[in-house]
Amino acid sequence: MIKASFGLSPRDRDEHHRVATQLELFFDLASVVAIAAAAHGLAHAIAANHAMDGLFAFTFSFFAIWWAWMNYTWFASAYDDAQPLFRIITMLIIVGALIMAAGISELFENRPILFVWFGFVVMRLGQITLWLMAARGDRHHRTTALRYAFGIVVAQLYWTFVFWGPEPGSTLFKVTFALGMVIELAVPAFAERANTTPWHRHHIIERYGLLNIIVLGEIMLAIVTALRKSSGDITLMNPLLHVAICAAVITFSLWWAYFSREEHLQTQELRRVLMWGYGHVIVFGAAAALGAGFIVLIDVLTAHAQVGVRTGDIAVAIPLALYLVGLWFIRDRYLGGGLRRHTLLVGAVALLVAGFFLPAPLELMTAITVLSVIVRTRSVLS
Image (cartoon, rainbow, N blue to C red; front, side, top):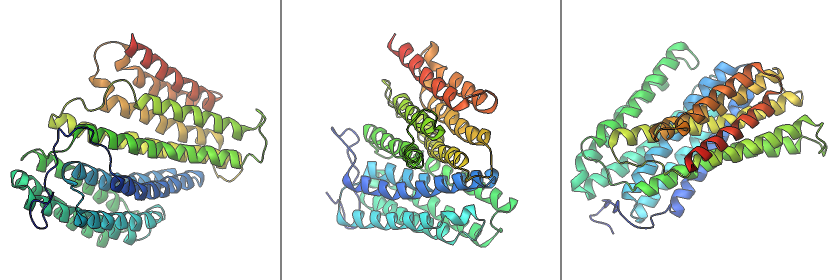
């Protein structure tokens, strides 16, 4: 129900059976395209022996994608009343995501970031409009909504300076980009302290779980690529088949580790909520980078890379370990005593040792991942 003309009414944060809407799933589709572009760019950079440049470009491009998705997701959880204007603005934000996806290669090639900047600005202008509509339609949270709108405006002015300022790829550019990330992260912390918006806890948990499935899909794309390039050779002597099998087992294990028996976000205390919401960038980014790592391994095995097999193994080990660390950070460190609190951390360390130093690292990393999930699960059930 529309409370006022061009206003958005708050949703009931205790609403029963609240699930993701078709519009939110449609929004996720644009995020899929952008995430795939970032993962592809990272894989290409590592395979071409430009890992550090690729990591910088991936970090910032993925942050922009995730940040726009996160801001819209939390807003929609609190204010999506399905009115036509809300839907139209959402579609505008989707267009911005597609523009940004089209320009992600600019970051990887150290070219002017016109599309990335313009696409992000389009998305954020849409978000500013939504917050102003919320300020109009929800007097109880008016200050919070105006703080959001003001903070996003300041951040966009800063991004305009970044676009017209330092040369892409320079050290100054990287520093100013990192500062922009800090400014963006500060906006919700500043705004929510006025009065917490009425987001729905179970809805938010579902939305994050859905994005986790999306980023794990990047690994599945690598599985398909490995099978396609195996040229029909399905014998165990084919290393591409090893990659496909290991990637599949790891993907299933990571899904199992994320969707555990314990519920995510068990409190609505602001500091904990911010840690959980922000900390997911480690989980999501690691999953997307893991898909890129498997693509690097495939390129190495098919002689399409300028790096060796060990580099490909490391490209898998680092994001795989980060995924487990991210899960520990957002969830497991808050659990009760016992082995389950630290299992994933121990597994992450073991993965790095295997990836960097041990023989048959891919098979060993697969075994470590499975074992970590089994031990953690058994410790929870006991």
